[in-house]
Length: 365
Image (cartoon, rainbow, N blue to C red; front, side):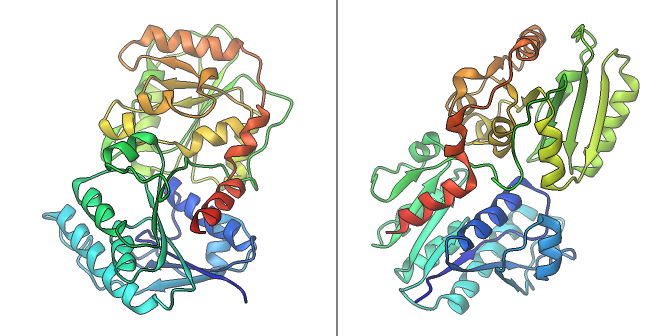
């Protein structure tokens, strides 16, 4: 009998965010393992859709997965005041009613990125794995209660998340970082002296620190282009203004809302990937950036902000680290990365999404 897996998540699709891309990649690769997969999520804004043709076009896949977009008559994004609390209330209510409607039997598998879905499924003793990507007091309490049930398990992105959640049972907790999608990221032999930053420019309303590339002292002394790939429309416009103001011998190029295939092609011909982030608690402890693994799969040398989370990344011994408060260390790290030979470590295959979903599926048993 074909095994069924329901991926229930309080995300919305289509979207260009890293978490949405990784969820779709996870679902399609689980489907390739012979599971009958359904992705269940709220249609919580005007652009949300469960039209399979639209989703296939957006994320460039042909796999036949079941999409179930649920109605969302809840207060999230409908009131300007106390928006954070309306999100929490909407998330709780949606999770409760969605689990009640779509939970079917103990024979099925459930995967979620929602702590509330995890909690309500655990109350039914469902076979559920929760992917935890950050920590809060609420998550800590819900996870602790949910893990009392026999079939509940947790995947955390980093060891620091495991520590912050106060999780000790290694049989029910697995540390598993992000993974690049095998379908789009590959290394080419010919490299240009391009430096690439791919990802969001802000996190929780706070700049990630990309402004450091506009320091007028940056002089790389070779024919170099800095490429920025982001779907943050308003922030990208601000960035373009800074480029106009900045008088530099370096060429800048900005791309908006590229497909994964297009991103993979740009990365594969570049030399250096920038892993820039601020020094917030989230960045320092909870980050396992998808773009890092994409950089490695594309054979890039990586320059990264010196953070605890970056130091703990796989293969981090090859990263050129810099101090976020010291431009000279950034300049030095960038020059070192440009002067190094590019190589693709054979170990990078360990961090593909296909390998990752195999580990997730094995974790259920």
